[in-house]
Length: 177
Image (cartoon, rainbow, N blue to C red):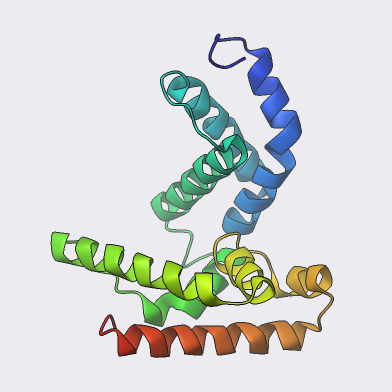
């Protein structure tokens, strides 16, 4: 429908993926109204991108648009220092693993780092990988993860801590930290 510029396509996408996108944006921003705005902005960006873009996974594409908009909104508002939302906590947990520089060398280093993290995650058991990705990509609270994975919250925190430690060791071994 989007390829033919039918606005009904946007309504269908919002119905199908809206709650999931709102969940991710809400976890990053900690605010329902801001999450709604991010979803609406993502739908507008989607409308403007298709055509010519033809994403192979529409769900992932819409979620990534929403997540990136939420991250940019958070960064612009400098809310990372003021918010008690889940995202600032998840960033703090990973902060020591990633450099914060903004130059070309750092960008290349970030790409190498991303490839190493992706390779590390691909070797994890599915449950641990899902736990890690949902926490650090989706900014899902440890309480929600505990409920979803049928674990205690303490077990979730310990598991994530151990995964971060193994990731750190792997990155150090590869000379990326």
